[in-house]
Image (cartoon, rainbow, N blue to C red; front, side, top):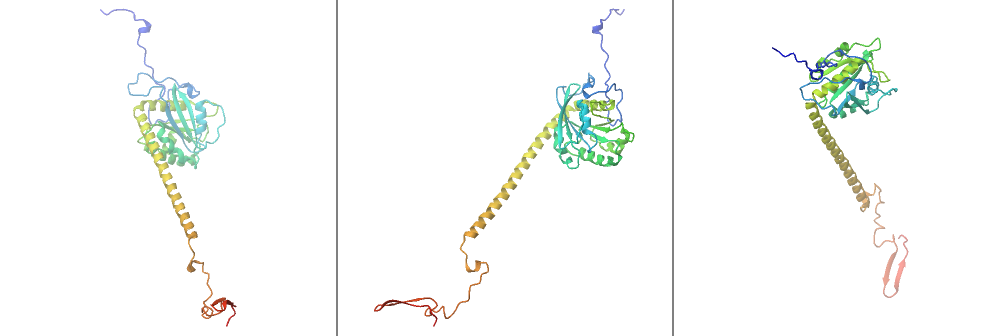
Length: 321
């Protein structure tokens, strides 16, 4: 007969909590979320996962990309909880924030046409990317699509987790996340685990529910893939460092070759100036023709000196004969 012993409350098994952030690819919205606030208010992660993940103390690195005026900097300021007006980013600005205890470095890269060339300089150092789209500007969706696919095709970013934010959902003309996913052709990103959410990031540190869910998804996805992402990041950083060193050496070699060639030209010019100038090197100056008469040694073209032992030395004038 089974025992009817009462189990104390502190020994009863605790029910496993359900994660509040969806862990899926290609979803057009985050569900089962509660409340709004800054990124520091993200709820704890689900426990009991068996796959290899990064310890919470390990720092993640993300890069924020997108067209200019998409709202990247406003989004970053909202994540940081900073109540200030944003200005267009020139170059890039690094920020640090904690998401549920995990430190995250976030590179905010400018989206201007003259700045996009530096994006690839940061791909090797990141674990994941956030691509921000102005969902209210239909005229620039094709431009955003090209930028996204160009970035994702880069060997140092391809396959890393991607969070797409369809921003400015508070505007009436904004497209829904599922429409943005179709316009950006996210289904063609077969190598990347991606997640798209609608966003309405505003100054003052307010982050909407879907955006909170998206940030939680990216943080969790990087943790889940840490065993592959971190060694890849370290390898790519070493490769990039070696490549930059090689380019510096090549540039120094080119400059040294140019300097040596210039010095050789200057030395040749100096030697040419110091050399005796012959008749043919006098710059085309014509000498007067020879005078057969005056060139005769007996002529009076130049004063003549005659030595007579009896009469001494006499000098005749140089008058012509």
